[in-house]
Length: 138
Image 1 (tube, rainbow, N blue to C red):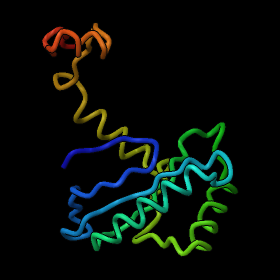
Image 2 (tube, rainbow, N blue to C red; image 1 turned 60 degrees about the vertical axis):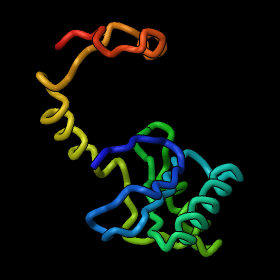
Image 3 (cartoon, rainbow, N blue to C red; image 1 turned 180 degrees about the vertical axis):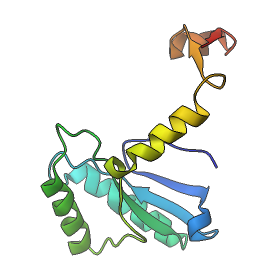
Image 4 (tube, helix red, strand yellow; image 1 turned 90 degrees about the vertical axis):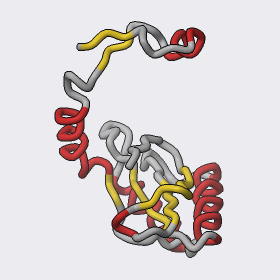
């Protein structure tokens, strides 16, 4: 399984979750830094309608790791807004802030040397060179 890290809503129509059988899975991942605005609402509605049209599950993940800007009150209001609009998620709500230990364990076990490489080039430079061999092992 490939881990995908994004900060905005994205439909994952080809991701197969072992927890939810072989149904397509989509998700909405708002950051609770304020009220749900029109852009996020449009994204939520589009991802919800798309994944439901495929017979899939729509997950909700709250991106609340920015402790300075995120507020629990905004998380609660986002949930109320989604429910009011009949955008009902499947399964439990995932709060990123409650998963920090999982990510740290993954980083220390999987991305630790010898599996982690430090690139001395920018992403743009690597793309221009068309190679990934300009790295050194940590």
